[in-house]
Length: 151
Image (cartoon, rainbow, N blue to C red; front, side, top):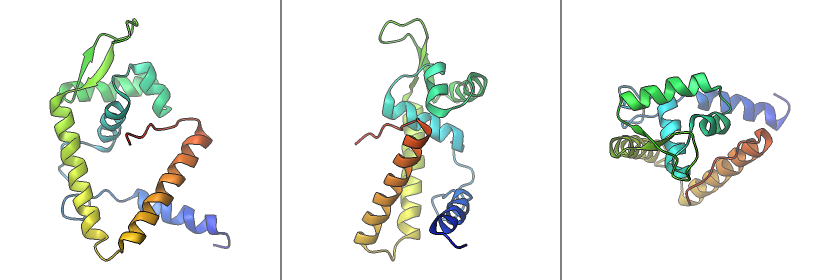
């Protein structure tokens, strides 16, 4: 591991294996799986989206998004609506149940992060968040798929 990017790759690989639950360990039994969490998060921040828009946003084929949105529909997390802008494609909108499930998942993850990072200073937390945001923004720019941020 001679270059700093070698260490970053290794740590990013290790980070990708973790999913936090409300007790600070691996998440199990939550209402949302990872793909549903991402799907609902994107729809929340961007608003109603069609299959084509979701496929472009995630860089996935339409058949994959059809499966994911079908599962979200069955779970009651999204609903299909006419395009609010008058377009032909129907769009997916978050339901109250989906918004609640997403809020619960996020709150649990934040509580877990609070537990895991309890010994970190506010300055360290702020710096880490800024570096993560910059890292994600640079990956998004490199891949041509920016993720809108709701702030």
